[in-house]
Image 1: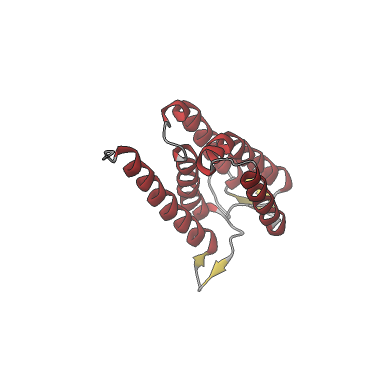
Image 2: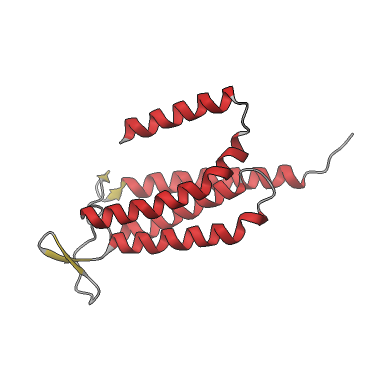
Length: 160
């Protein structure tokens, strides 16, 4: 999966350069597809029983792998639908190229930070620290920093 993602990014970058596509506008145009894929990924996790939750005694737990677990796939699905809906409402407000994509990245990273607490199959690094938390924090910092930078460029007065 990782090599496929890297290949897709590389091929997309080469194609974009050859077609002289603007990076931020292209990412904004692709954001609804990314949000839809996020919904599909949640459904795929649910169907396959992957990305399963921690054991729970809550009444809405689901039976999976011989235990009653948090339905983390459903939590992820709800978060993906909420992010998609928020982006759908806000898509016309994004007059500066890149902000729609960066909002999507920040919201998705924020959701991952919250939802990861319910996951039972997370990769742990440095003891109890979850790799998904580290990556989500990194994406959140980059997305918010880039958003602020784009907003400052947009509001910066033009001097002649």
